[in-house]
Length: 301
Image 1 (tube, rainbow, N blue to C red):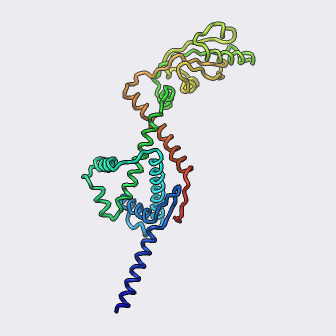
Image 2: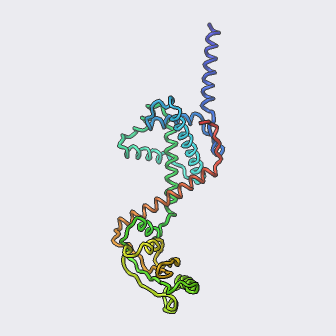
Image 3: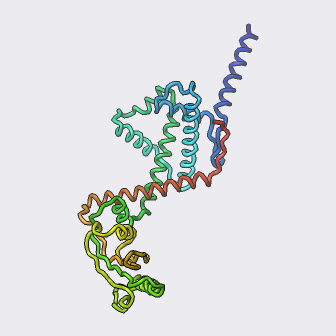
């Protein structure tokens, strides 16, 4: 009887050790920091719970997709954690709790609902908190990036014009060559260089080879060729020399004002461009972070 109990106890201890060893199995290494099988399984459980996935174990394609998502998110978490340590930007418990509360409030959930929800699904709360910390670190990175983002008047004009907004008031000086000889094109090139250096235009700069027309009006009144050229030019800019049926042309933009644009519309355009530029910078930043990192995946998905 004692011998039988000993064998049962022995196998029980062995089983516990096997399970513990399995949970500590490493599925990936990120810059010499391990991601364990336990963390991987916990993240998969969290994804299944959040997305209300049914019977994922019975569908290999869904399980593979969840596994890949779980592994990628854990790698991102570890990269964010290491970055925060490097720059001294640790996320406090207070910030973490405020972030969870904010999620609950945005989704009209009672306080503590998320934690209780994951507990009811058997999800390790630390996996959820780890991902929230990662998102907070990303948010801090984006906030820091936003301070260096500048939007030029040219970028604002280009966005407005590319969306076919025609209420733009212009003052242009358009030089048109009197013929299309090689000698004339050379003189037009010299004029182009001089226009960039000087605010004053003298007759002697163009009279013998080109005519000058001053155009003041709305963008919509111009022909399509001129509209396309003006889109890329700021106030005070000079166009490239281009050919028309009348001769070679050169345009100097004296003024360019978007008419009837409210402060609210202007703020919207600036915010849109800032977010777009930040998104591009962030995408490159996080992509470069991954490229620089040593990532070894031991798990076949």
